[in-house]
Structure formats: structure tokens, C-alpha cells
Amino acid sequence: MSQTYTVEMAQVEIVAAGCDSITTRLSSLSILPEAELTDCLEKVLAESGYSSAEPAEGRLSRLVAGALVEIDLRTKEVRVSVAREAVQDELVKVRVERTGSQSELANAKRESLSRAIEGKKRDLEEDLAREATAELGKALPGVRAEIEAVNHRWLAEAIKRKAAQIGEVRRVEENEAERTLTISIKI
Image 1 (cartoon, rainbow, N blue to C red):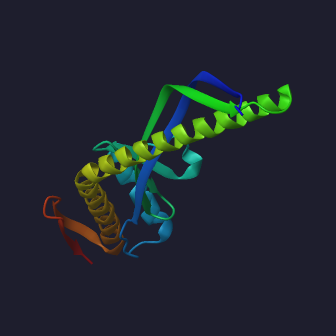
Image 2 (image 1 turned 30 degrees about the horizontal axis):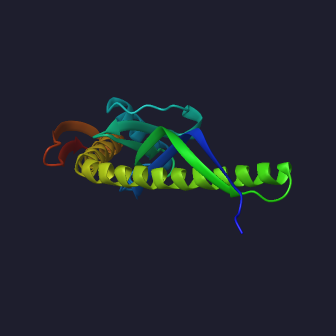
Image 3 (image 1 turned 180 degrees about the vertical axis):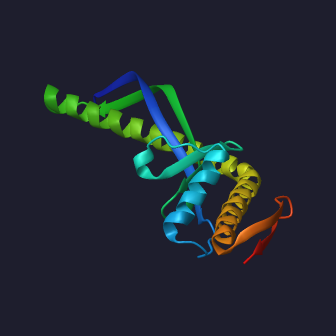
């Protein structure tokens, strides 16, 4: 006895995205009140080319070595991410056993098509996530150097402000390459 099947081909557009990220936190010293530390950080980030898409969020971001670096001014959390997106046209083959009414057949076709599309989308998203992970790995040395430089400039700015509050600043020697800061003050 033979079975009757319906086989259809459908051209579909699959939109998929893959992402990978890491999170760390800037190291902080409690040398100034929190509001002043945040002000120092915001100043340093603005000078370093960071900007905010939505100022109300309190996050500044910038592309560094192909990765998006986002710094939360309130929590001092740093999120580094790489995202990949793709739109792909696919030819999907649907095979449904023909039993029951036309509406049952139509439902079976829709479900089969939906499963096929989801499978292709899942595979594409996994590929994109692997690409994002590889790109994130390549970007990390440059990102690490950027975060260390921002952290040094931020703490140096805070220390300079604190020194000015303590007394008259006589001399400031800063070597960013060696991450050193020397301040002479008269109290």
C-alpha cells in the first residue's frame, strides 16, 4: 500500500544573529566620593572617544579592535561584545504525509516549514556565534590595553583632584606608558 505525500519547496529569508561577550569591572580606589569618581570617569571616557547612544542609561561605548566596549558609569562594569548578523535566502523542502482534510494538510505544511526554518536558523546562529567568539578572542589584547589605559587615566584624574583638595599642587609627573603618577603638593 502506498502513502500519498505532498512535497513543496519554499524560498524563505532567514534572519539570524550570534553574539559573544565578556564582562569585567574597572578597579577603583575610594579616594573621592562616588559622585566625583563617576564624574572623573565620565570625563576620561569622553576624552577617549566614548559616547552614549542613550544618556539616560549611564553607559558610554566605543568600538575597540572590532569589539564594542561599553562602560557603565554607575557600576563601573565593562562589557565587551562582538555581534554578527546575517540575512540568508534558503530553499526549504517540506514533505508532509497527505492525510485528513485540506486544513489539516495546510497546518501540517506550516508546522513542517516552521520546523525546517527554525533548524536552519539555529544552525546559522550557531555559526555566527562561533564567528563572534573568534573575533572576540582576536580583539581581546587591544581591548585589554584600552581598558587598562582608561582605568589608569581615570584613577590618575581622581588622584589629581584629591591632591588639589589636600593642598597646593606644585608638580605633576605622569607617565601613562609606565602607568606612574607623581604629585608634589604643599600642605
